[in-house]
Structures are given as structure tokens and as C-alpha cells.
Length: 108
Image (tube, rainbow, N blue to C red; front, side, top):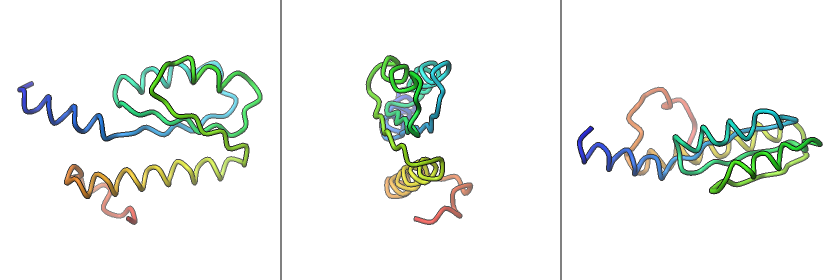
């Protein structure tokens, strides 16, 4: 990989976020958050009011991550994820980072 390619990849990585919905997932969320953080700089975990150790495991995965504790039901968590997704796609379009037509049907 050339230096300009590495610079572009670092720029994309720093402007990309992963949003992970979680509910009663203490066994896996820490590993999922850690592996996701290896690919992108910003990880947001949306909890749907888990009563187990899901929140603690996600926090133990290390910074930088954001935790949103909704306790408002599955549909609210999905809507939250979609809001982040639309904002990310809009940002990528403005920065001319999105060249793939796969997202052309996503409303801005």
C-alpha cells in the first residue's frame, strides 16, 4: 500500500463510525466492540435496557466508544442506528468519500 493510500484509509477510518445495537449480549459485546474498533475509530453501542452486564462489557472493551442506554424498545434502538447511518452517509457524500452507488437510495 502506498503512502497516499494509507493517508486516505486513515482519513476514512477517522470519519467512520460503527453503531452496534445490543440487548442482553454480555457474552459477545466486548469482543464485538474490540474487533470493530480495530477497523474504525468511533464505536457507538446502543443498549436497549439490558439487565445483564452488557453495558459493563462494552465499556471494558476500551475507549473511544459511546454508550447509549435507551430502554425504549427494539424499534427505538433500530431507529437510533438508522439515524447514525444516515448522518454518516450524508457526511461521506459531502466529503466526496462515498462513490459506491449502493447507498444512492438512502435518503439524505
